[in-house]
Amino acid sequence: MDAVFKALADSTRRGLLDELFRQDGQTLGALERRLTMTRFGVMKHLRVLEEAGLVVSQRRGREKLHFLNPVPIRLIHDRWIDKYTEPWAAMLSGLKKGLEEGFMEKIFEIYIKTTPERLWHAITDPEMRRKYTFGVGVYSDWKPGSSYTGRTSDMTVSPGMPISEGENLEVDPPRRLVQTFRALWSDEVKREGTSRVTWEIQPVGDSCCLRVIHDQLREGANDELFGGWPMVLSGLKTLLETGETLTTPGSLMYLTP
Image (cartoon, rainbow, N blue to C red; front, side):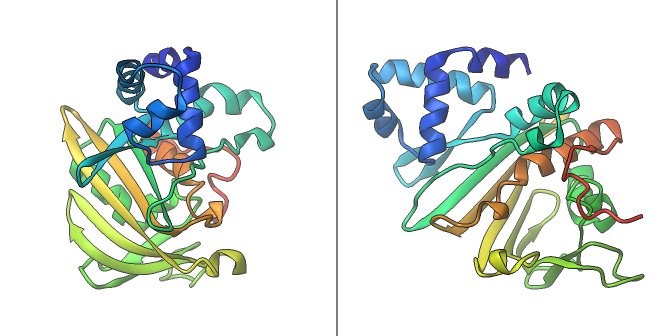
């Protein structure tokens, strides 16, 4: 967390984050043109932001695109801000603007001290999932081509409120899960249609790097589709590392006894 505070202390680096907030998935050249500094200077500041986890990069052919990763800021929010503020302050902006052939792509990354197997279990077990995904369990047989549904209660007891649904496109435990995603919690999000969510787990020492890629979102999509990811991943990290659940406003939105 010290690296995050250090990265945010510099006004130029905050400016780079602002640029990625306005338009995500930019190349080094695009960022250089927006700032009055040399290419080397931009590279140096991007390296600091990447080391702090505030920026993640993704190759697209010959290009290297840079994405804003709001998860570390969410963790700071949960640790230092939320407990001192009123509930309205909990809506930390994890929103990013990006374009790729008329679609948006959002990338979130977090390091969790756990094993790939425990992390996979937390993602695919409905009771574990309910503890950090707003009280919503995700039910499936987790086979390629099978369907899944997200509901607000144990389906063996009560069907609950449908929250999401989709298809498991790739299932490679405990490394990679690719799913279509259709939100169901309101008429507004239903109109957004289907997008795609990819979970990538990479072991790093005694921890795991979890990268969530939410793409195939239409340009200007309703931010409810992706704005909750920082809170979800922060809750997942807290659960696996401490055994506790977050009680930030909204984090247990649909949780029932």
